[in-house]
Structure formats: C-alpha cells, structure tokens
Image 1 (cartoon, rainbow, N blue to C red):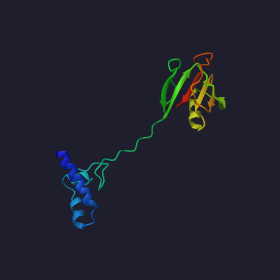
Image 2 (cartoon, rainbow, N blue to C red):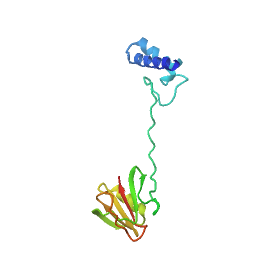
Image 3 (cartoon, one colour):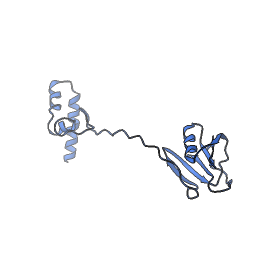
Image 4 (cartoon, rainbow, N blue to C red):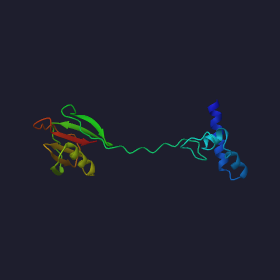
Length: 157
C-alpha cells in the first residue's frame, strides 16, 4: 500500500512539474520529503534521476573487450559458440564446401577469425596449417573429412 501511495505521489508531482505555474513549480522544487528525493533534489537524491523523472536511467553498457575465440578441437566439434557478439558453429576435421571469398596465410586461427569478422561478405571460414579461407556462404558443410582434427571450419549463424 505504501508503494502504491508513493507511486501516486511521484506521478502527481511529475504532473505538477509539467504545469507552468509558480505555485506548482514551488511544490515540486521544495527539495525535501519523498518527492524532492525522488526527483534528484534535497538530501535523498540518487544519481541517475533528474527533475521531472520518476524512473532510474539504465547506465550505458560498457564496451566489451575483445575475447579471444579459440575453442580447441576435437572437443569443440559441431558445437555452437558466441564470441565478440557473433554466434558460430565450429567443426573439426571437416571442410566447409562453399565458395571462397579469398584465402591467405595467417599467423593463427584468431587472425583468420578476426579477418572473417571484419569482412561483411564472410559467412564462414576454413583454417588449417596457418592458412585461412574466407567463405561467402555459411551452410552446414557436407561431411567431407579432412586429414586431421586440427583443420578448423566455422559457420557464422
């Protein structure tokens, strides 16, 4: 019951703040009691509140630091992962048989992954022996076994 009365008081005070009269402005701006504290005035003010606002503002989300995306084969085979906001399915020892956008040597799987993320047309990749193939399509691969489980393919979902 107290919460309901408090909510009604807040809504009434907010409505009064909208009325352009000196008397109404004086009622809202007193700076004491519940209304003053809830409107960010007086001793009970809380950060995130401003005059005429009865709701807490959600803080801006902090930008996430990049996460190294390197699930290990063979335990990562056919599992779904999420990394840096991208969801993907990883395959071990299987080749993604879709058209290649481009291929190049890279120092690591992470460099191949990052290259695909930066390329808008890349929807999948193959990585083996420090060579990266960026793929234009991301369909589940047919079961085309590769020489060993260290051959990594991913498909962005």
